[in-house]
Image (cartoon, rainbow, N blue to C red; front, side):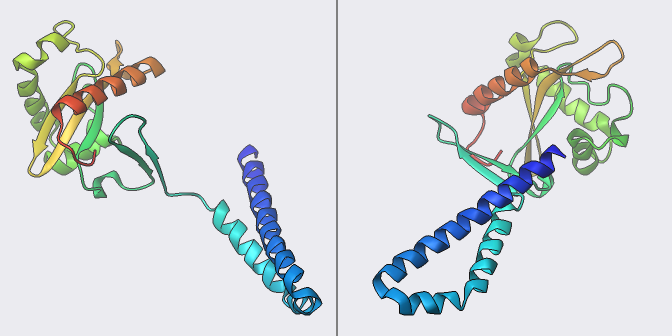
Length: 208
């Protein structure tokens, strides 16, 4: 109900804005052309209604894409309502900070991005991706990121390349005693900050 009222208010505001602009243009024209133009304009009052209504509908339609410049950075962020696998570029995939790909054995039954990645790029076999990640984590680069034998720091990033597609697996959740991922606002903020640092230092300049 609240969303409906908000949308209705936006529609009314856009409608009156359109009428106001059209009326201003008419008033300016009439000022110079006097009564002859005013009489002519009155014959097409219905056209003003159509134009105003069309403008209000257009402005009230939901947006499919937003764009914003990152302050003090040579980067632009796009928010799109789109199939992520149809966007050309590298894909950032959230995982738990243990980097356990199929921690509860039900990965392939979920609709998560991680599940779709495994199905599409790793032959629907989580073990294939797990082996690639384990090989990366065994390198010296990740010694400072490791907390214990099980966990890594929130914000740890593991890059994996499959053919021409680059993936960045980002640790942004923790596993509880039941092997379920838990996340809070602090983890999200920390992981995004660490991701930005990693991409700035290690990633190539391409769409992410």
